Length: 92
Length: 396
Image 1 (cartoon, each protein chain N blue to C red):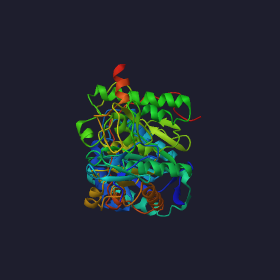
Image 2: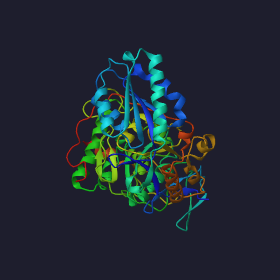
Image 3: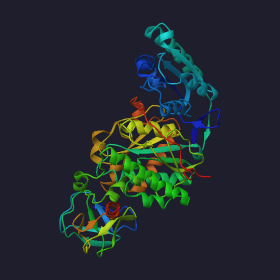
Image 4: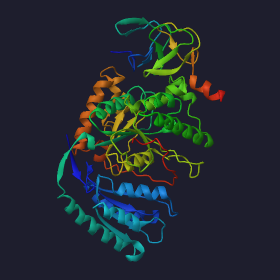
């Protein structure tokens, strides 16, 4: 059974399909990734290392920008990414 | 292949329903009394509650009464309301459909109007039974989509399933309509890249900007703490969940309620009124949006739900795609497709999309959806105001 769903082949994050624990192993494209954080259902996990200033890709598109380097298996959320849209929006 | 009822304008319907259409709330009860004994025989009630004139409501009533799923219409009027019932009758008549108007004030009241209405309905039922069915191709089918009662599962199962199904069926020639511009805030630039023309691309951004301003004026923010707790980080991520219902195909145009897509393809339906907020929320509930999708010609509505909406609709069948496996277990009698099995890792988005496509064909051949079988025939039509489409919205 898949523990995460990857919604598009170009995504760099997956979505947890249940509450996953730190240390759990998930598989993605035949790679095994050890979770570095607890990942609750519906939350995102990095499927690869993602550098600062790079984009988080989900549904095959950018959903925001990385604010600090993310290791594969980490929880991806407000602590390490932010909206690009709101930035542009509030600048106006 | 599907089976359709051929109409005078060349369009085909997958149902042959009779509508009892009330032209003001004052005639609603009488309309319902007439319809109720025949609710299992394809007789539905639609109507407009308002008495003050409203062009949008007039247009909606005309579009719904001449929808290809409709074979005959009984107009129920009180007598002193403002809706232009004579014009409505003329439009229905000109479409080749059987139509009758009963005006309660002229028919000696409720009791006799109900009797007269029932007699007419019974005759129409036997006449419509004889309507021949003809083969109907995918390029004669229009499908709308909406999500309601969404939760954290909607954006990762049912919505992408609908998007995938749209992609598959658009290749076969259908017309597909998505909407909810208020929930597309943050992904308008991504959406604009899918536009068929550069003019349309600009209009797609403008349409979402309009929704953004409208919702701001209403004091409505789209991103909540609950969204973040559920795992969504940004507004663009949240909107992508709703937007994923539209699939990945090229977008061919923007329409407004009651505008029929001029050719097949994928359309964004702009349901947010033009001008400053005048009559309240853009849409009071899901059924108001479903009615607008149907008024643009949709034969079938694909309804994605996580928490578990149970509604159906008058005029066109609603297929409910349940995103959440737990909800599916609780509400199995109301849910047509279990996309929650993707959460359980039992099936993939592609597999459920294939199941949904097969299900659509069955519904297009006369099988009843879960909501149809339970006689769900919800309908909502409120006051609204729209201007004309901007140049570049429709394909040439």
